[in-house]
Image (tube, rainbow, N blue to C red; front, side, top):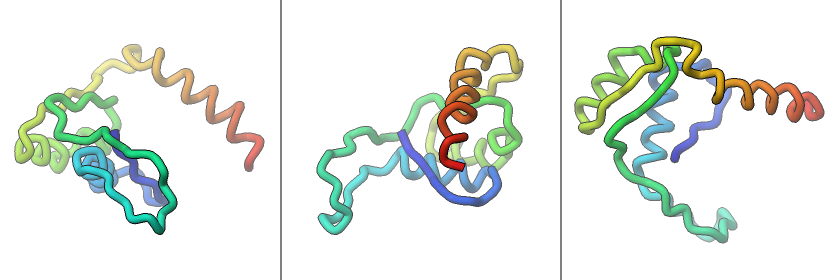
Length: 99
């Protein structure tokens, strides 16, 4: 699992940064005040995404070829309802209190 937080628009470069974070071991100095190990890292064998523009780029396909994993795109929007609905509910019911 990896993350990339920022204010940039979605792009293949942002996805690549999140992939980099997912693949590399997470080791932070004591100045960060983190008290737990983050043991989840490593190169994926398969990378499943929705059909967003940032995932359909040649850049992401090239990264997959170079690192040896297969990118799988969800082609039909109907395949994502189970995942997308909870995110929508979370965004509208939770974040509305903060903004």
